[in-house]
Image 1 (cartoon, rainbow, N blue to C red):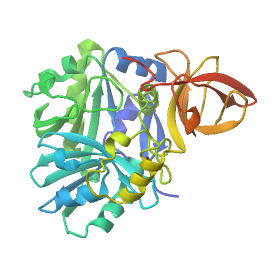
Image 2 (image 1 turned 180 degrees about the horizontal axis):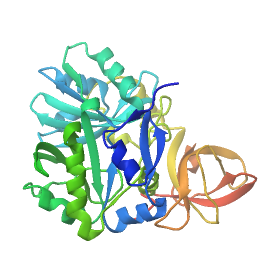
Image 3 (image 1 turned 120 degrees about the vertical axis):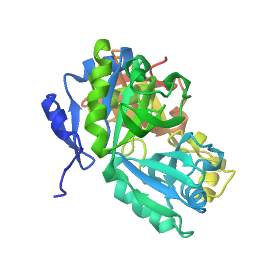
Image 4 (image 1 turned 180 degrees about the vertical axis):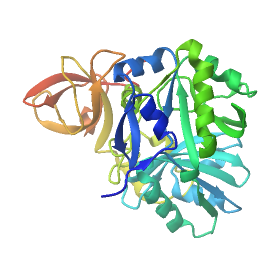
Length: 363
C-alpha cells in the first residue's frame, strides 16, 4: 500500500470540518459542507480550493524551450514572459502521458504544472527525453497552490496585493507580493470556468496566505471548496480530467484538443497524430445532457437511438447549475454532432439524452 501524503494545510482542513479522502496519493478535502452549496458559491460568489497536491517542475537553461517543444503538443515558442499555456505530453502510442500548464517565468526559465496522480510518471518522462540536458528541478514538495475562483474573486483578494488583478488577462500571470509574502505567482487561471486566480506559494507561507485570504474575503462570505464541487464545475465547462477523458490510449485529437496540437513543429509522435487528423477520427469526445431524470456515471454505456452501444461515459453527474444529468463521453464519430439524440444506459434503463456543444453550461 502506497502511503497517503498530506498537504501542508491538512490540519486546517480537518479543523474546518472537511471530509478528507485519499485522492491521487494525497489526503484531500472532498467537501466542507455540501457539493451543491460549494458549487453554487463558486458560480455566484467566491471560493478557495487547496490544490497543493498538483506537481510543479522548473525547466531552465539554453535548452529548456527545446525540451518543452519536444515533449509538448502546443507551441511554447509563442509564450512571452508572464504567459501560461495549456498543453499535453503525447506518448509514443498516440495517447497522452498527462495534460499540463507551461508558465514562462523568464527567458530560458519555465514552470510546468502537472496533475498530482502523474507527478512521478511525468518527471520520469521529461527526464527520459532530456537529451539536450536542460536543467530540471521538481519543486512539487516545496510548493502549495490555492485557487480562488468565482465572480467576486477580485473583490475578495485585491486588498492583499499591489498587483492590479483586473489587469491580468486570462492565462497570464504576475509575480509579486501577496498577503505580505514576496514573489507569489498570481495566475489568472483555474478549472471552473469562472473568473479567478491560482496562487503558487512556498509551503512555509501557505498557512499565513490561506488565513489572510479568508480574513479579506470574510465580508463577501468566501468559503473553502472541496474536490467534489471542483469536479462538477469543470464538468459543466466540458474540461477534460486525466484518467477520465484523457489517458495513455486516447489521443488529444479525439479529446477535442486539436487546438493545443500544433503541427507547425516536431514533437513526440507528431507524425502519427498528423496521420490520424488527415485520415479522420473514428471516435470523439462529446458532451451531453439527459432529457429525462437520471444521473450518468463514468463507464455507463452510450447507445444510439436503436439501442446499439456506440461509446462510454467518461464523467457524469447531476449538474448543480442546470438541475439535470450531464456528462462527457467518447462515441463513434457518426454520433458526435451536436443535436444527435442518444441514450445512456443507467443500470437497467436506457435514458434519453442529446449531444451538446461544449461548454454544457453556457455563460
